[in-house]
Length: 279
Length: 270
Ligand SMILES: Nc1ncnc2c1ncn2[C@@H]1O[C@H](COP(=O)(O)OP(=O)(O)OP(=O)(O)O)[C@@H](O)[C@H]1O
Ligand SMILES: Nc1ncnc2c1ncn2[C@@H]1O[C@H](COP(=O)(O)OP(=O)(O)O)[C@@H](O)[C@H]1O
Ligand SMILES: [Mg+2]
Ligand SMILES: [Mg+2]
Image 1 (cartoon, chains in turn green, brown):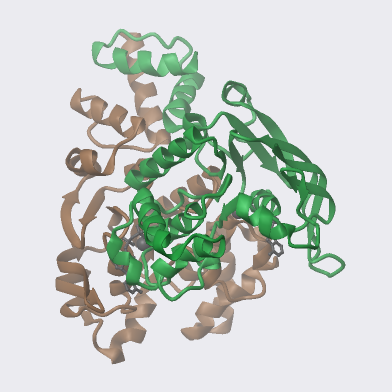
Image 2 (tube, chains in turn red, green):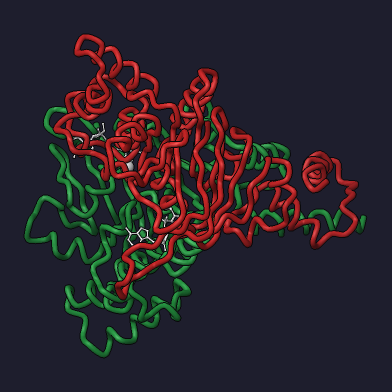
């Protein structure tokens, strides 16, 4: 069963002077067990797309469904959708409201019926997975460093054990060690059959970890395919992305030196590495 | 000069900065590196007196941040840009936002008009002068914050993770802007988690658990923190070139390509 978008359009502040069409003509199917990365410039509609997935936003026209349940139904099925689709927001502060980190992380599972005696274990497990020390549990989620806030936001969604895990720029502000921990965690979830959807600005993260890449531009999906096709596409810059620096270096040298063959021994190894990147 | 003299700082009873001694000289460009929670933001907030040392002192051009009467002068000298630009934008148009800070510090009206154009030109956003800030992209908002701060002519610019929430092309733009500010003679400090960005700075400071444990050139620091912080193929490639004596310091893609093209061409001539 999938998350399914059919002919979806989304407009912020409709019929006001600030009216803004954020998504247009979105058709998208994400099946169970997939690992999808969404890339695109700021303002291209990524966060809007994610918020439609768990029913926080309802389509202005068209339909979004999760396992065949429409997100726009006005009954308690929205509870069912939230249960299935866990969304970590782009700005962690936007999801905090409890007085301490423990309560913040426990809120979801408690609401979804986890027993009090289980709650402690669930929270500690989540905290450990994202690499937070237990000492933060008694602190206010607002009185943390930027990266720590991000980790609390992630922990409070994974603690609900949703079937679809949706992350909006989860690695912004995380240090490299925490980024690795995050992807280890995600890989473990995949083994349990979870579906993973991640928005990121890092092309490197996208190609190292996921299997399917979606690129958004101006509210539309302009690319949807596998890693190989994505890398070969000549449109990265147009889409607001940059290839990793060594590739850019190789291309820049190639532009200026036709015969990229070198006699200098010191240089030759470096040059052959760069050459192999162009081919 | 900015000087930290045995600075100790704690939130409630959590020690966050532990005996920091640090001197930052005019005209420096410095990157602050460290794992989450190591104290980077706290250290930055000390510089303009947003946080005060629990013990020890911070001086900005000789002025003690603990002296309330000097805070105004200190904040005029130190421009701060926070990680989330939205929290800093106050104007209803780009132009107004830039003017706001200047009004606050009493820049005369005709002077203000000139400065608005000047800083917009600097961040290459002149055509967006009359746009409402909420219509800007994340990268443009970040550049607007830089412009608004710059218009107040601070001597020091402190930027906390200016590149962490924006797309790669906007990021390159911010980094170029940082280099330009440095060329302009500003003293610039910024923090990042993206290791490749350290190549633009001559000096890297590494914080671990509230202590400065390394302070030196990017090569020196990366050689010490590789295990703890990780590395990247771009950084390792340059480390290798350094080891073989092909370059003597890290460079951005632009400069490194020029250098390698030169070497390739001269080696071809031989
Ligand atoms: N307002 C606050 N109240 C209490 N403790 C705080 C507050 N802000 C930060 N801390 C704590 O101080 C320590 C250092 O935080 P700081 O924000 O300086 O770290 P940082 O190096 O900027 O981290 P990051 O890379 O995550 O942004 C952390 O342990 C954090 O939990
Ligand atoms: N709450 C909102 N109110 C009005 N406009 C919004 C809101 N959130 C986003 N937008 C606008 O919708 C468009 C898409 O934004 P968003 O989905 O946040 O993009 P991304 O996540 O790719 O940066 C942008 O033009 C943005 O300015
Ligand atoms: Mg977004
Ligand atoms: Mg910080």
